[in-house]
Image (cartoon, rainbow, N blue to C red; front, side, top):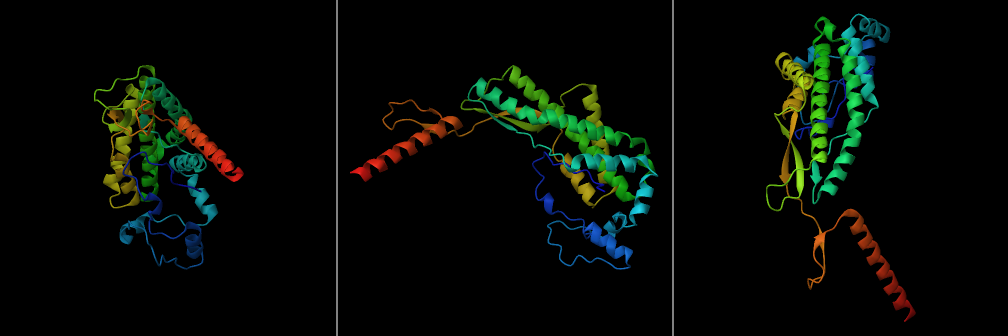
Length: 293
């Protein structure tokens, strides 16, 4: 059963995490070795980040037989809640939000915002379900009996709360921009960028989730230093949970005659595709003409 909540990071500092290893072997093989009196050795760990084996020893997975493992799950509601939340995320694709929006005019900006909002509507429902699943066991968190379970639960709760705050602020700013597009202050700007900010959009409930997310994530860093859980918590906290708009400039391909007869104007994807199709058609006709001659 999955014990860790798998969520992507929205922060810019999350790189090469797919190659991060705890130093333990594959769970099934390691458990097989444990049940038969053997040891699974990791002979060549080529991952970039490594962890102190002495520290990680106290965070070892539970290698007891399946029946015993499931029996101990029934002894604590927080464990059951974490397993339930992790199962929800196993096959659920979580989108990475679009943060750059072309804004040559308001119509283009609104179209891009509309498309960016679609996956976030589904994401909000998913995050709410995961959060509710974890809340079922929150009062029993202090009764968790190992450092591994406590770190896993705190990271799951902290990250899902952080993502909910980010998603709410993201949707709020997009809706506001779509309703009333802002005007650029700098000459040549044609793009709006969403950047992390300390400003939290939303009412008291969102700010409460923000403070709670910080509490859970900072507790991991304090109580489980030099572990993968503390490392992931630091990445989540490496950028503020709010958003703000910043204007930018995007280089846009242009077309027009060399003699200046045709005014240069932006070329968008459909127009560029049509231009290429016409050029290919003209080349095909030229080739046919040459063959006839």
